[in-house]
Length: 383
Image 1: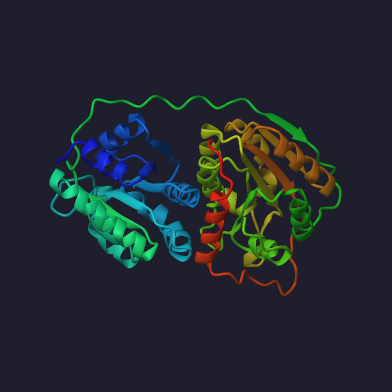
Image 2 (image 1 turned 90 degrees about the horizontal axis):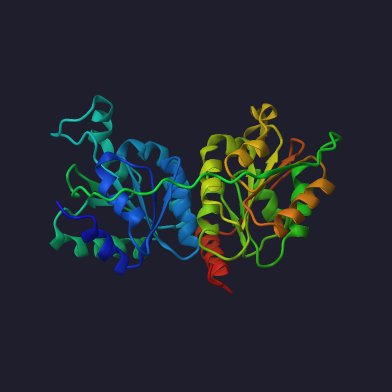
């Protein structure tokens, strides 16, 4: 057993100062020390998959990251670990507990995951080792993890057994209540524009120093077709994770960050709205293009027609929410969002369908990540 600081200190010396995760009782002293410790940042995520995406965004913005979770939440993290971290070569140090570890008495819901945790990590090609529970082992364990991540660009996992970290008396403060935002309704209830022309209008509003993260599917494909720039990140997988990645970026850069989301993607991880609202990065603009369908998979309907997304975003703590359904209103919404302190949410209704014979980004995902990271690092000022 070690004290939390016996790991946090050596990790900090090696540059790991951004933590994100979802609690587990095994992690309680570890997380509490992280949240109350000096010179460490911790973001409380709504789900494990969201935590992985937030950490990915923070890494793109120059931070070394550690994600904390219970092994029961690994299922929530499989998608971004395999379709975001893996193709884009985004490393993070993952610390997952071993609830239900064979030979240890635990609750019945942990039994199966305890049996398969290490096999699951191996199946995902994530190198792993037991969390060091002796002070003498911490530095070597961290150095092994760092060497692997530097060599491969892939995550590395520590699996934490019960009792690895000593209890702590520290208690984190409650996260401050969300602010009360404003709603602007610019809807005309006339014919809806398509996604391609909506993206064209968005690009006209974007300056060269604004980062743009596009959700998976045809949104990123159409954006690439219209214009490929170093500040574009095409999230070709990890559906639902664009907003969380945008949060991770926005918290760690002085640049404006625009997330282009979709209704189906946002519905998948709506908890991210609450996380963004709580941490409230002023430089984040969250644009959702809502065509009421899963367009990339054949146009199956979503449940978005019954959802007032801008109202939900503002209720979660966004500073501004705008509803629009025409190009003029969309342009006005973007102009306001770029001028105001955010986070801002723009709910843009568009028509279904996409360009015919639509291509895909031809730049390898790892290269997209490298140039986006370089873009974020250029001309950076302290936040």
